[in-house]
Length: 242
Image 1: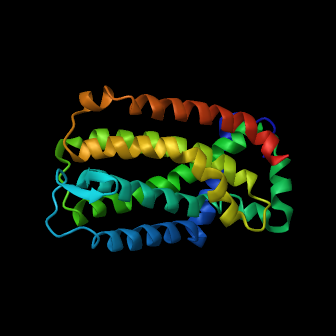
Image 2: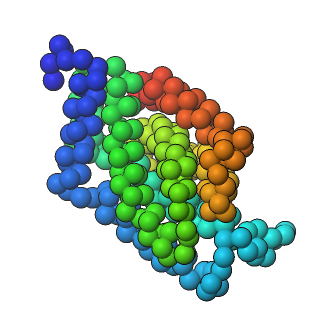
């Protein structure tokens, strides 16, 4: 990798390397997709047949709408599928001290963070593109013209999820039990963004317009979360790796 190459070019090369390896090995994506499909099929039998999104179901200490339940189903599934993929972010670099070699690349650590985050985001988006339409069909949802705000919510949640997940994947990269350590570290910090995603998605399932969604404070939570943890992740990545 030439020193004369720019920041973007080097970042693109590192991200492309990981994507090519996954394209050949197919280790991460099949595991994530299989997990999501299995969970969705199981959840499809958890609600009474013919349930409508506006109906309410008993849930201690009160009741919630079916839309809230379905939204929770969706994002919990995405959460754990994403953690499966993030746990393998530095799997290749752990072999034969390849991580130490990667750190010798003449590239700012924020570029390495960005490359790994882009790869994780690509994996997550592929899983969602393949499985969310199936989720809509399985649960009889009719989004109609609301696919655009749904896509916006998905992207905002994914950006924050990937930024924080990639950072904690680096924290746990050298640990033997990294698959267990990563969820323990990441889950408490991810609570706000997934609550926001669940609330906004439930509103979309109930037919809320984009203007109605924009008036809710959850959009501000998502944007603030993405900005804060994107910056923190890039700045803290050097310290974490060292």
